[in-house]
Amino acid sequence: MIEAIGEALLNVFGFPNVLVVLLGVTVSMLFGALPGLGGIVILTLSLPIIMAMETKLAMMVFAASIGGITFGGSISAILLNVPGTVANIATVFDGHPLARQGRAGYALAISATASALGSVFGYVIFLILLPVVRSVVFSFGPPEFFLMALLGISLIASLTQSEPVKGLISAGLGFLVAFIGYSPITGDVRYAFDLDYLWDGVHTGVIAIGIFAVSEMFFLAVKGEELVQDTGVVRPTVRDVLDGVRFVLANFFLLVRSAVIGCVVGIIPGVGANVAAFLAYAQAQATSRNRANFGRGAPEGVLAPEASNDAKDGGALLPTVAFGIPGSAPHAILLVGLLLLGLNPGKELLTTHQATVFTLVLALIAANVWTSVLGLLFANQLVKITRIRVTLIIPIVLVISFVGAFVLRNNLLDAFAVLVFGFIGYGMKKYNYSFITFILAYVLGEIAEVSLFQTLLISDTGFLIFVTRPISLVLTLLILVALGLPLVAPLKRAWTRRQLPDAS
Image 1 (cartoon, rainbow, N blue to C red):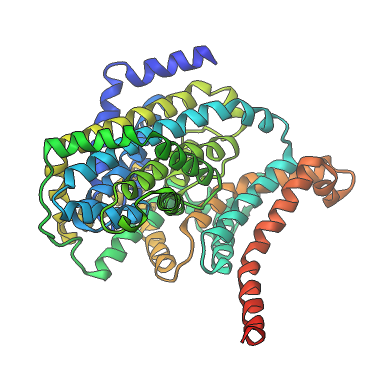
Image 2 (cartoon, rainbow, N blue to C red; image 1 turned 45 degrees about the vertical axis):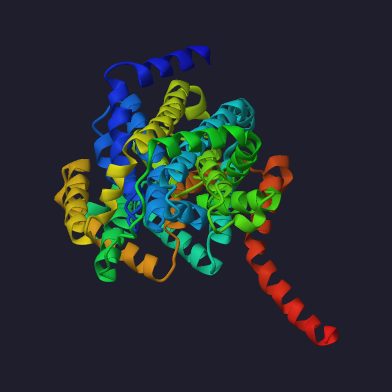
């Protein structure tokens, strides 16, 4: 492990590799600062780029893309009252009132410092828990991997959707697409409809670009609105920036509590940074001596959500690399990238490619710190990015998407497939179907199929093997709990309505 860490340090901080992180963070932060666009687009567009890179450079590109998203979103949240990403919604409550009071630099400095320290805390926790997770992964066999795939999909479908049935439908669609082409077991061609193009299935990068990037551009085009409006906020000052940094350091325990919340929430697949941010905001308000000030410009209301939504990345990375279950939307794209590079999450990634994992983690730490430094130095200039017109962004992103899809395999039909999945993604977004569940089911489809086949081969009791092995039994029970969670809220509401007449 020490050798792997040493190799990772050379990979990340050696010249000119470090320039990849610095440049990537800058681009990612600009995308994160664009309300309605979100940093997920830059992550998706990086998929064709990494295909031509060495693994270590590809990890740094992903780290840079993830590292700049969240703080980039806080810039527009604080200065313009429009969160750049859903993770920054809670930051708006007190960040923008501070900016309207002429303390924009103070709020930005709190956000930048809390983001940097929160992310470092999250990845340190990741490194501490990694040996424990490795021992768990080594005890897994085909039945456990099959059940982990189902558990991840069940959790995401149940916890991230206001309509869990739609989440499960999204998973079903993902499985259907995953089964197109040659069967990994029998070699038969399935669902190809006599099209040679579909014999090898649909490329993972093509699906990701269409579902995430192209569909988002279609949605923005149909929406037809400007990104933001000028709110006349006073520009940041150097004194406010220094005061903001000091405030975070003086409230270290609030920072740690918020980061812990982010880590725990991040480990739960699919819950997302917005949940982590709101929970951290709630605990900050509950423990504050100035609760009445929340919503009017409380600095704690900026510190807590920003520390939490950056710390959650460390937690979300854990199930991604250990079990192939992404803890958030950016990590779903990261999972796609790992598979495109031939890196299978789980035992192989945590043993054979240890240096790759540490390269990713160290690059993420460097990216988050550099993002905060850039945010403090250039906040005045970055706010101008949020005034770019949608009509300028859409054609550029679409061209990059189609060209990137073609570059993946030098196949013109991939560009047409991206268009098809762009329309599919637009429909899913419009009618509130889950992107993450779809892409996760697609990615895990082959793994689940092969694991199920292997399980039945080694089983003397058929499907009973899933309840006769201790770990399998626990996973089976967790799946049932996850599928039962959506039933709890309606039953609780029905019980409450039934009790109301008695109370009156």
